[in-house]
Length: 246
Image 1: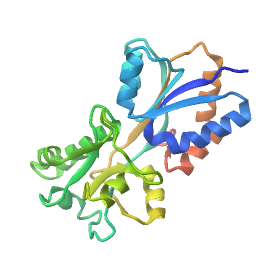
Image 2 (image 1 turned 60 degrees about the vertical axis):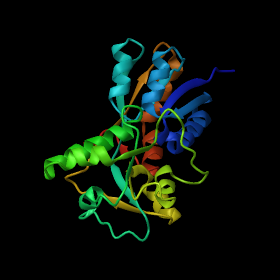
Image 3 (image 1 turned 135 degrees about the vertical axis):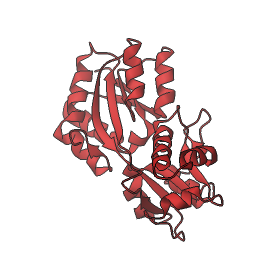
């Protein structure tokens, strides 16, 4: 019996990779064992000696750091993502009014945790873009934003909910900056509403994987599957953008 390929992967990949790994196992006969969580925290665990064969992150920085410490090789982008804003159903916020709403002192802006979860870092990048559009906006948003998930203590999210929609629906945040790959699931549930970020605030989130065990031939086979048409089709089904488009 083949030993399982151990993958540490960003939590935002869980829905897609669960299906992708099932298809990979069917096609290859090679089992995969996955652990999911904030990519920054997973990277810390790998630096401290935990074993994985492949690290699939929601950013470039975390795999690059493992490569710099000679703990991983072959960083490669395999998918892309964007951000969106999640608001309540009765909110009148639009893309055109989103920045003004985020700056409104009466409204709470929720994010994931910067430095520990790339989603939080991408939110900070959005705030920096806001500062280019309006003097002082970056500092205001960084000071008022509340990190509600992605920290060292897990935030309980009920089954069947996307974290961002639950946090908005429960009143923890009026606006939550979330990955756009969740948009379809959020809109299908009908419990909250998705607002697209205007182009001037939008960022690109690069998803990068690196091999922690490059001598394992099964890791190479899995990487090829992820980069191939079957893997890319599954990632697209779950809202991710292809790795090979700018």
